[in-house]
Length: 276
Image (cartoon, rainbow, N blue to C red; front, side):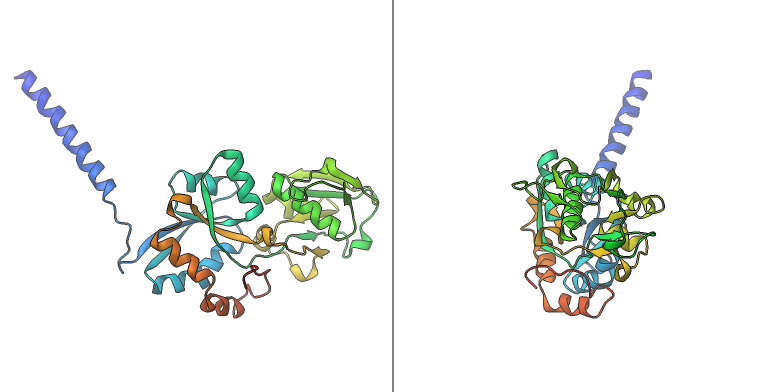
């Protein structure tokens, strides 16, 4: 009798586990309207708004529902995507994607680009490049691709010169050949850059964090002259790039409806993809 009871208990637990597993495997990936649900990772900044206000309404009409998942740094959205916790992300430019994917051996693919706010030189102490004092402290993003990008912005504005022959996508502070104002560089987490202006003379702030902090782009000390590889991209796992939903999103990002939506939105002054 004891053995029968024990066996019955084991079978009951096994049945429960089996039901749970089946329930998980068969969890709906469609919403009440029958649309395919795609979870998209974003970070602080305009990209969640860009999705909700412009991209998602178009996608919904084409059978795809986009749901946002918020992250607080530049690392987790790609790891979550590669790990299957989300189906896509929108937060990074091509330069960052290539380096991060290579460094972490992730198989990720960009399926389209979106209008992107520029990196800015922000300050609470000066208003123009000429006003930046000798020996000024400059805070830069500490991830490699955006450190290089920040140096590009400083060079665009005549504040430094990087050594000849250095790839401008890989430049580090050690590659600065000329620094006429003797800027003192400090690299910190990108999310902290707006706040760093409380103590630093200038901060090189990526557009998404500048937007999230409510910084005034029009009154920035200087704005980045954007390049194609610093325009942000919609990213999926490579295995999904030819799926129907990924093709739907890719087509939306080059559609006239999307361009018109941006033109009539608060994102109209962002840097545009090359194919626009």
